[in-house]
Image (tube, rainbow, N blue to C red; front, side):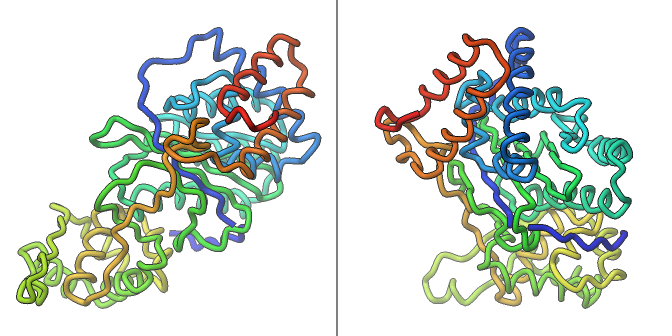
Amino acid sequence: MPSVVVKCLMARTGISDLPLHTGSAPRWLFNRMVKLARSVSDVMLLEFGSEEYLRRLADPFWFQAFSCVLGFDWHSSGTTTVTCGALKKALEGRKGLVLVGGKGKVSLRTPEEIAFHADLNDLSEEHQDRLVYASRMCAKVDNAAIQDGHRLYHHALVFDDQGNWTVIQQGMSDQAGYARRYQWSSQDLSGFIEEPHTGILGNRVEGTLDMTSALSDESRKVAVDLVNDGVGKLEKDILRVAKGQTTIDEWCGFKPLRLDMPRTVNWKALRMAYEFQPSNYEDLLAIRGVGPSAVRALALTGELIYGAGPSWNDPVKFSFAVGGKDGVPFPVDRRAMDQTITYLRQGVEEAKVKKREKLEAVQRLRAMVPEDVSI
């Protein structure tokens, strides 16, 4: 595994639960979305530059409104996949700003697409390596370090030629039929592990393992120590937990802690980790093969045997990206909405689109905000 130093700025991320809609967007609608996305992008890049535009795309409030302006339902799971698809098409042929990845198998081609566009934009090999690493770590964190019952099926990376990037990915719920969106930005990112999410939105899921929580700090340290101590001892510890560990809580009348150990653990990956001797949790998570099962096994072993418990609270804060205009399920974040309206209204007004399309876009923005908010 190559050692890559990633110099980034603060994580702006968001998670939103959206009803999973099947099918595809009508061709007539998608073509209009592409056209309007291209026009709004032109204005944003001209007025604010690629760094600010990427910051906006990573903001869940702005992204949700942007999707509505393009013509999608505010609560549909397609706000992620179709909007990113339209934006990818809109940015085709543009130097300096690129969207790679997408839905399903397309997401797996992200590293190859990064390499292709890095060559077209004369990006250094170091820059390319940083982008590939950021793409992989964002997916690793949301798929393994945060285990909330959603499996990633969409991953998109938007980047410019100055080192700025945004990741927009989405996971499908194993049970509820909802999709959850995860957004990242390189702005002020201090690291990929501890609380990179600052704008998390979604319906709460009980029993979520959150290794990114500050409360999981000791658990992360123990996980690294467990791996570095040797796989033989680790296997014995995990076997003890899998069989059921008696705790003193039972004798004190408290409900005993019973957590599900994975049926299988990737021992090959943990042996690789032992040989690598990771110095911190990011190094451990970055090792290929260290996925959800290994993360969970290490967390449970550290909690039940060594007393270093991780956070089991879902790191969500809200139910939708901008709230309901009637205050359901929560009042709109007016500061965020005001900023969103300002940027999008300017983008639509200055976009090179027909007058009727501008009016329709503004009307869609009007439909998702409270009556007492001016646009």
